[in-house]
Each structure stands twice: as C-alpha cells, then as structure tokens.
Image (cartoon, rainbow, N blue to C red):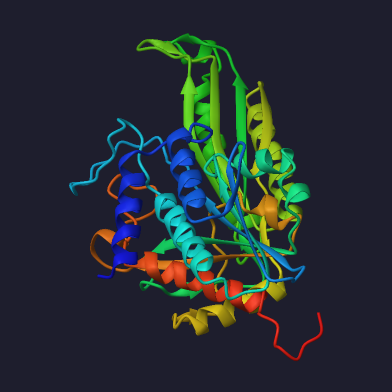
Length: 385
C-alpha cells in the first residue's frame, strides 16, 4: 500500500471513529477544513465546508459533493476503529465519501492538470434531507457558481469500484406520512361499546398495500412503508386513538400526488366504514434525484478512463438522496460506486455492522480526478484564450 492510500485509510478510519449527526458535524468540519487549507485550497466554512481550487484561465466550473453526517445507530462491528460515540456510527459510508473527495482535492492541488475551477462541497445532514437546502440557503451556488454538480454514493453488494448510473431518475423521492385515527376507547372485555383504533389502524395498514399492488403500474417503482403504530391503549383498555407513521418513495412528482390522493382515500374510507375519522398529513423530505444527460456521459468517460467497471443505464435506486436539491438547480449526475459484494463490505447500508471498504478510497479519488480532467480540460497551446 502506497503512502497516499495509507494516509487516506487513516483519515477515513479517524472519521469513522468519531461520527457526528446532522448539523453537529463540528469535529468533522474542522478536520475537512484543516485538510483543505493544508493542501492550499481556498476554504469557506458555513453550515458545511467549501473548498475552491482554481487553475489556468478557463471560465468553466464544476462542483463535487461529499456528505459528512452519520446515523443514530449503535455500532456492532469488531474492528479496531469502531465508533467512540455511543449510539452514533457511520453506517452509510459518508466517512468514505468525504475521504475520497479530500484525496481527490489533494491530488488535483498537487498536479492541477485542468483549466477552470473545482468547487468541493462537503455537506452536512444528508440523512434527514436538510443539509443541501441549508447550503443553498446560505447562497453557495451564488457565491460559487458552477455549470455542473456531481456526487458519489458507495453501493454494497456491487463489485469494488464498479461505476453505475443513468440519465433521468436515479433516486426516488421520500415523503413522510402520518395518519391520526380518532376512535372511541373502552373496556377490553366490551369492545362493542367503542371503536377500537387498533382494529381500524390494522385495516388501514393492510389496505395501503393495495396502492402499489393494484393502483399503480408494476414498473412505477413506488414503495409504501408503515414504520410506526402508536396507540393510547393499555393492558385492559382498548385504544381510542392511534397514529400510523411511515414513508413512501416515488419516481415522479405525478406519482407522488397520486399516492397522496390514494392514501387519503384509503385511510378516510376505512375510518368512515367504522363511523370514525382519520386525518392524513404528508411531508416530502426528499424530491426525486434527476441526472442530466451531459454529466452522465461525462461520468461514463471518466469511469472508463479510471479503469472502472461500468454499468450504463442502471435501474433507479429506491432510496432517496439530498443531492437532488443541488441537481434540481444545476445539471448534475449522482453515481453509485461498488463497495464490495462479499464479507463485511457486502453488508447493507444503515446496518449496525456496516463498514466502508478502504480499497475504494484510491479508486474514488482517481475517478474524481479523471472527471475533473474531462470537464475542465487543459487548453492546447495552439488554442486561442
């Protein structure tokens, strides 16, 4: 293992050992900002960290984004760099995303074989879908205007270093929902005297599954999940109130609207059949992530130049990604980078024993360097400025 790879591994494991939740990435931001300053970049700190690297006289500018936050999960791994923060861990590989981008910044600063400006965006709070908007609200794209924006997410289960993406929809939206059921509580021995909210809620949970299976096209890619069922019942008390919570994923604003309409129809219809009411509310946390054709083709070229296995026009991912806020304003591409398909590196994202594969660090850094060279090529000597 070379010096660059060893340093990147130590940095990634340090970030893994000290994870921080969204909008609390204080130490992580300090590490990132110090690293960028040490290699000579212009650094700006706000809710996130922005590094700027300019070379040549070209007016072109692109942005590369990495996310920094961890998850509220207790780590169960047994390696020697497990999280030292109880109940918090890097279970999604953001420690690796940050390190790969820092490695690319170092290489580009040392050998700036490009013409233009590279803006390195280190984003907080991706997991709750709030960090990108916070950076946009601070005016990051006005202060550092770019023509394109890119982001990488590691993908366990795919071969190490395999690049996959597609034009158009790449990640689903996520909409949180809450269904409040107002019944009539009563004695558990006399259910006929009230309206048991659990029974009504259970019917609603079952009926919601027909939205995907019977109301939408099979290839729509919609997922509806009830994740919480809360009541005010007790051992011998039938609940009069219940709340169902969860989320649904969709691949278009049109499908989002359709699912909301059908969920209201189902919940209110089941409740009405029992003579009670149900109130349904929605909160879209993540919009759909859309890749632009030009940036996608650039990713394909960079992947091939970096020697990566390439999967074109991959199936969209059902998870959601805060990068969508950036790519909704500037043409961009979100891509997946294989993290490994066996052993510890095949564990699912957000699992308590997940770990980013350090073998991916130099591959990701090389990919970023190749992409910068592709999008901001050096001028030939005979070219006019």
